[in-house]
Image (cartoon, rainbow, N blue to C red):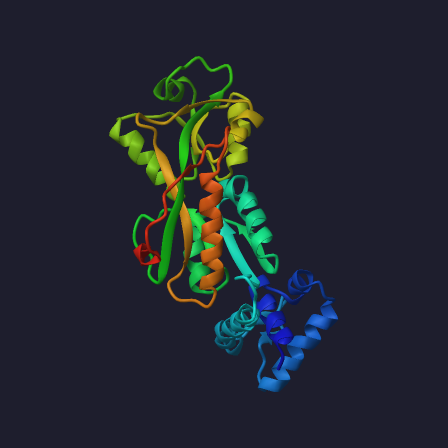
Length: 312
């Protein structure tokens, strides 16, 4: 049994099929199938039910998956024991909310690459409510996500920045305040199941603002396009002012003082890649702190010790 076969098995389990694993591992489908078959032969059990299309992971496969991830994580840390100058190696699988993809992540990854050139980071975009289970199952190592509304069992979350929340409207809208803009056109709601929507709803409820809802969308890009074409107004988090300029939108901060959401890095309370996530968190803090003109993120000062992290 080799690390190559374990990585292939984990890839097939995470991506849902042998063909998807072949693409992720840059191998042919026959090569992927041969490696999984070799692992099954050595273990004496089937890891995938090939009678189904695509092949489904078996109970034995599920039992092996978490241990295989642990072995791979330990293997990838071997280089750190002999690394010079604190250089880190290995890989991180990072989940991220969409707004961070265009703000702190590019700067953070460039910084990490400069300091730790052997460290590899794979990024998957998603939404805050989906990340806790992905973390618990080991499908991702860390996630940039909104502040949880309640403690998450087995997960730590550390804030590093705040994203302001804006009322957005067509450029030719007449309203000069957030409330005036909201009453001028129908309301396009950002999906009510997203965590940031709770922050928005609480702010509106406190001010007793009642809106004429016309639609509800999941995508910030889709909302921006709808608003730009005059179909309504909306309330969204904005991590970069360039987003507003690109879509040619009128924007007014929600509330006085302005309402914002806090974003942070979440990870399992206990896992084998703590050194890597610590380096990532430092890079994220640095990127938020260096936000220049035109940036909408507000950096949050780090706690004195890591032990002050919010735990589930």
